[in-house]
Image 1 (cartoon, one colour):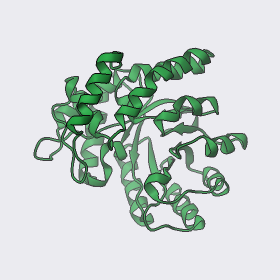
Image 2 (image 1 turned 90 degrees about the vertical axis):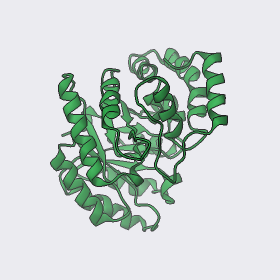
Image 3 (image 1 turned 30 degrees about the vertical axis):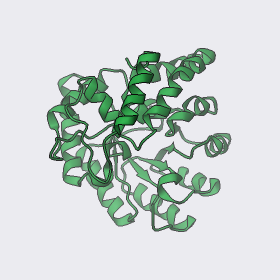
Image 4 (image 1 turned 135 degrees about the horizontal axis):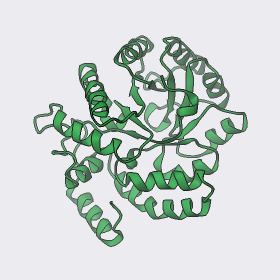
Length: 298
């Protein structure tokens, strides 16, 4: 089980490779997990937004977790596995969290309930009941997707729950994190890639960054330099990476991430499940132009 002390560094939300006929591409997934595990990351997140969780069945999640565990064992790597289990139905979230624990997940990532717009007390109760399952919970706050923004006071209550071990902050700023850190918060991971350096400066323990699927070593270096006291070097390196992040998310993720992974020979196909679409030809051209001019992808 994941502890608060282990929530640090770069956690990568993994993509879910599909074949052209929308089936799981397990050989590509094995190759991809091997590549990510060998890059020096501190954790993997399965069935997050980057993994197209709205269109992936729980049976498929089970396959992905099992393949990940087998792959890590085969290359003698021990990396925490976090599984996304959050839905807007508390009973479903509890059941998925229980099943994730049975699969051997080290923690679960639970998003703020979306669409049905619960009250603050309803949100608190959602996390309280889920945390009682006994699998460590990382709270995921992302108002742009959920349609609700949790207040600082309610988030403090949630973070104080037994069983909640940290927060992925994707609030498009540092305000929430700053308030929580000042009150002695549990670990917070940056979930909004463009704010990674700013959040490190405000006390973030690391990042849960989709863009770290590409340029992984550079994101790890930004983190390592900062934690080792080279804040200026960390800032300069992140400044060089920042334009890449802008290009990567110019269209909904993980379209561009998958296209780049195909170009690198790590996965076979950049297929996404509807309603998501592959990256447009215009964006591919812009990314190619940027990569040539900047030599940005390693």
